[in-house]
Length: 421
Image (cartoon, rainbow, N blue to C red; front, side):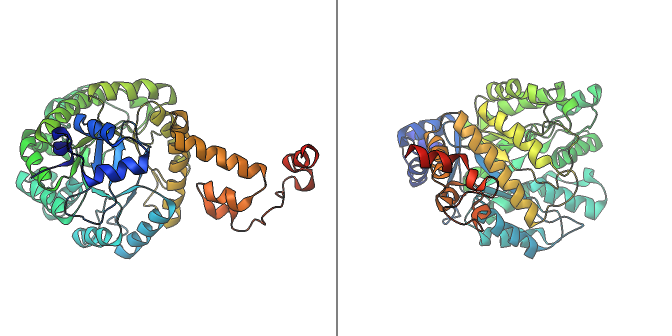
């Protein structure tokens, strides 16, 4: 039984490390050391031989995740597979299946078979949904059922799982005493907090954390330590409950590393712009610089229908200050399940945010790509511009070699080229 972090600690370089080092243009020994330290993870279940190994963490480019999945109100495996195709074509690096509709297992297996991208899930969604459907009571969910679903997801080939281990009795008590505007907006976090309230017991994901580590280690599944107490509005950002959970996650990161399990930490969703730098630094310090996976952050709460933009604003600043992995936000955020068009729009917007952060962080390839685009723009070379553009489709109807219709014959670059060449 071996994992990427176990091999890295031994000084061994795996084929996955070599693949990522070449793709990221980083020395493979530097990469191996960062994996050994737990500052980089490789998303790849050891049962999925055709998956594209994807590195997330310190010194690597910022990665983008796209969420899909059925809901009870809208459940179609075919529609989700269409979204997978859009995700691949649009350039996201990873996807998550968050299905809570009908036939969850069948949907998950169909998604796995349809792509070579790494895939994440939240097993608590399935366990909690099925407990509510059967008993109309989340408190009736058993620890054995939850852990059985976790193993099932890992065995099916899932590359990383979100587990809300930090939603402990102490943290829930802190939240209840403190109060919030939006309480808990994490679905998994809410389910576990209500389970704790109903049973009076400790979160099984925390109480039996060593057993959880044993399960994921068999498959080299990365733990994404979920932010069950992430703020659901700017007003709640950085409160005591959020920090209390983050402290617990820092403890769990170290235990995972010691056990030979890869782990990353999930970060806040709604954060005012001015609080983002300090919050990223605080989370990084408290979790010993584990890879940081953030939703957005969404910087204002008044833009339903445009939250892909509020998230991109926050995502760029968050990534510049230490976030390694951005979960996309679509125009449907806070409104409903996104369709394929909204999925594409969310990915493109997040990719722009990630690239802007890579440029600001000094990534040579990102800086060179911007330069190449500028040279092509100067030369009015539309084909070359499409080569470096995030969204190549915008150039499909443009006639090569002619100025755009904004300026026409008065194009500044056209006039300058004529007189200075």
